[in-house]
Length: 269
Image (tube, rainbow, N blue to C red; front, side, top):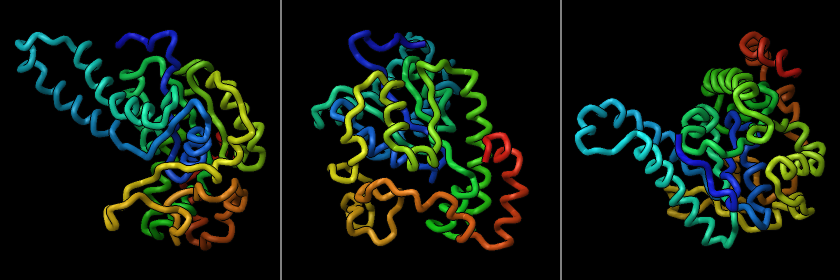
């Protein structure tokens, strides 16, 4: 285990959740806060975890070099922090948050790197998640969406018992878009930050987005015809809740009913 963050420094924040569950919406809400920056998806955790596994597999060869596994993990943690700390300074803020959807599948490793971090888990109706996958990437991705949603929900039940209420919270996408003031106040209480009305006006603020390899520029959501995620240039909207009812065909509905039934019931959907 690595040492906890300095008492004067607030812990890092990790936004987790199944892809297409509203993690981007939470990301831009937090990024709007004057104390918090949450930059574009880094996808670094998966890469660092892979590196860590390769080093572990060769640890016997590295033992003569005299570094302990404690130092090894600390260095990997520092590597990740280097990017976020630099970004945080450039934005003149005091705390950083990380949002990469697949991070929900690497929480144990994140916890190893940052044993005092806080997690915000975004949960959304699995039928709408599948629908969103289909709209963005086509019908062929439906089975991948089903697999990811079920896995994320199974992990959610683990995280509920693994972490205490000071380190882990959940918010439902449906609740967030229907009562954003209430849900963002819950988030700020959890994070120990002051709630401000500007959190509900994320679309009026500047945010950095994902690099487009085709254009060599960051994505401009104001002109993007098919936004990759919940468009940060728009106010919070509720029109995506229950969208699966209209946008999935009879066969697709039958498939997800069978595949998601157990976890939908457990989650109260």
